[in-house]
Length: 243
Image (cartoon, rainbow, N blue to C red):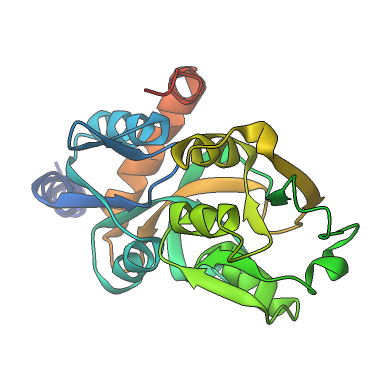
């Protein structure tokens, strides 16, 4: 073995050992795809994260936070994997992207009983008080479009309670979350009415690492995610019934 090849092999083995030794902190917010069950973080997206990190041979811990806290951790600390995060042009250089977990589409919802709220376009929605999660992609998007009547919350469940109580008038959600949250506040999905769709993000929610995370860890995770996706396991996990 020549000297250059020996040095290259030592560097490779060192990178692998470093990746194996470091624990990944996977963070997210409460949603239809990630939530607490019996004191543990669970849900379809969490199952995807666990399968990916196990496939990559990485140790990890899971944490559920308000979105602003999870987002801050992913911007400030190394070895933080955030999910599910919308991939937007503004965020492109702020994270190391792993892979797309699911497509999404946000729509404005109102209470069906509120016939006084009439929204036929995104511009119409500017007249009404809208609930958003602080630092979420919907928060950033609406501010960039000139929306000023925004009621900030730490999680979508708080905003849903405000919607039901008449404290806000519109709430942007994906349909799966609208269905889940309506039940959590003692209502039915049919009590809500979809009134307009938002064009925000790239249409996908992703796994992404903090910029300070070592490239060797990121690449191991990308390759593991690709294997999970290509085998069909990703789709099976995301389609699993929600407990």
